[in-house]
Image (cartoon, rainbow, N blue to C red; front, side):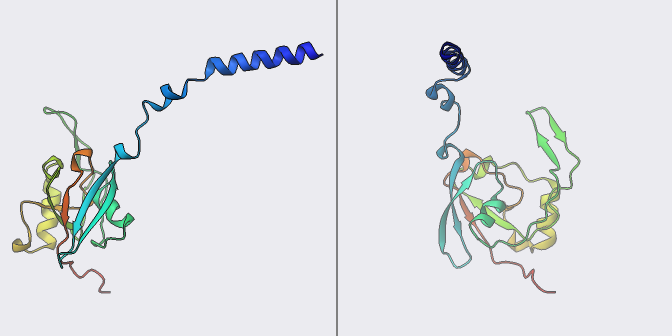
Amino acid sequence: MFRVVAKSRAVSAAVARSFSTPVAASSAGAPSVKDVTVQLTFVDPSGARRKVPGLVGQTLWDTCMMHEIDIGPASTCAPFEAVRSEKWTEPLYGEGPTSGFDHVLLSGNGAETAAPKNGTEERMLRHYWDDDEIFPESRLASVITLTKAMDGMVVYVPDRIVDDIP
């Protein structure tokens, strides 16, 4: 009986070794927290600055909500389209942004790497904000997806539109 138990332990140990990978090989491909984190600086209407981390792949609006930065409500449906290459933009048939309360101004690192404004985003900005409040850097936070190139970007938050009147 001892021989059977010893043999089964040896077999199970050999099987476990054959299916396992070394620690260094398995962790080499996994990104670290630093690889998926960007530092953003938010400047409120009074000029106060607040530096917060954001996660690559999340929207700017999600980052604001995670750090309790009040930029207003966002109402966003599925994406309108996705740029797959220089020659091909895939229509996704979503509605895109459906409100313009989450207006921000982007500057600094990576601001130019944000996806270009589409017609729906431009229409929401014009519908909710006056012409003198819209600048070339004006964007909706719910549309901006963070990338690693945006590390160090400065986000200016203009005065809010009153959105809590019943």
